[in-house]
Image (cartoon, rainbow, N blue to C red; front, side, top):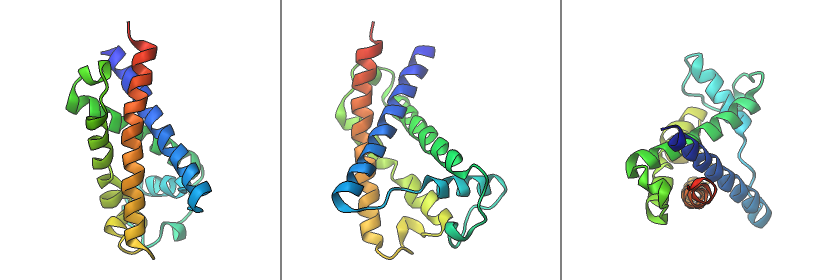
Length: 164
């Protein structure tokens, strides 16, 4: 059990790093701004105080440590999604990672920002209140596909590091 948790932690952290590297590449290649995890942290901090939805998270009261809260939530969510992969595919996936299930889980996780985070932060369901909703949706799907590929890559790395 402890070994499975360590593997899942490595897979989740590794996949989230892949997602962040994609954000850096996207900024360099396309001029796309980096995600603001400070705003995500602000949303999380307001959430624990009972406020789910904001008209604009940028206009909400700042919270001390919101960047740290946001980055922590970002990586914790990546680990939780890796746990979802292991729970749905079984521990055998960690022993023999395959790309298909990792991509399916990665792409399925796009539901979280589209149905929870974006509406909560004022962008509406599936970013419908943004200036370019279809571009935001495509960016979310591609980013979560990259996360899914990262689950696979991190699974292979974990296997290479931890296999008996």
